[in-house]
Image 1 (cartoon, rainbow, N blue to C red):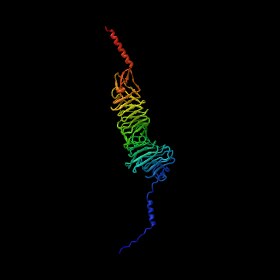
Image 2 (image 1 turned 180 degrees about the vertical axis):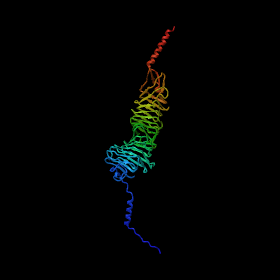
Image 3 (image 1 turned 60 degrees about the vertical axis):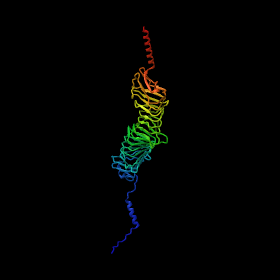
Image 4 (image 1 turned 120 degrees about the vertical axis):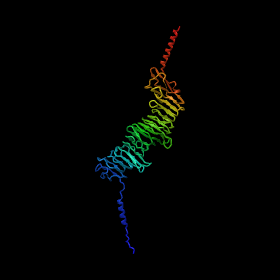
Length: 471
């Protein structure tokens, strides 16, 4: 005989109670929390927060009047983001070296108009979702005193910094994600080599400020807006790609000494170029290939690399300076100052060059042997149109009668002439003969005209005297 089991019915009310009990056991949704420092400086003390210690999806908020108990991190923190809201003050998040893991909410100083916020803890950016944004508002400064690195990166990982405030990087950083700089006055201040990581640096406006001589370690640089470089010397060996600007040139404002040793090229193949502004010096050392041209409006541009493949027009405006010992492609017009060579050296042009009436060509001469004087060189098939002023710097040169130097070489055709030449008088009765300059580019040391005439006169008197003594 089969055993019969009683049938048990569960009421709807019982099911509801069980479901409620299960839900109550589920962790509560993420909740942002504001620091009060009511109990201590310990970051992980629940009593110091309005809503408990922030979690991996939460914002850690620092607002109102800064408290005496500034947060101190002695164990790791995993948070969604950091927000500084104090309008005119500044916070310091200190640590013993414990790490902050920062989620995709990033860091922002929304509403802050002045003040400096300092994070003295390593930051590990969790880039699992690919993007992280830091917004530092105008007048606000964020100082990072320890290493910034990333985890869970993918090919689209990117840190974006904007807001027109300042971020100060005080140490070398190792993050490999892209770094995008946005905003006309958003400033990245570099106090260490490699401060901007090792990934691609994308510049869409903003300012790079070098505190002391610094070197970038980014794998590449992409210029998609106008950017300024300030402070001390800055060097990069990365290749630079310039994005198409609708037929205009991107603006590089150089207020320091910036050196680009990598190759500058067009981004996506569309013709691009740049306008060098600012009183500083930009030095190019790469085999550049960009095609929309170069304009030098202010300061100095030094070309030491072979950019014969950079085919766009090259324009140097009045008051600006072009120098170096490299090769320049594209038709060149110079209304400013031309200083070939690095000390003594040769600057070569592969297309036609026109010196405007306001041009000033400075030639340094330390000797009459090759390599001891500056040269302007052509490639054998181009034309040099002369005008303006030639200034010969003879400092350190001991002139010898008959010395000959060629300061204009390799040109198929030389037309025009300099309207003024300075530095002809070499002293000791010698001067530079410039009569062959416009035809063959040659200067020759000869006696001064008065000395030459006197020598000829003395020679004639001697001959007469000798003739008169003959029987």
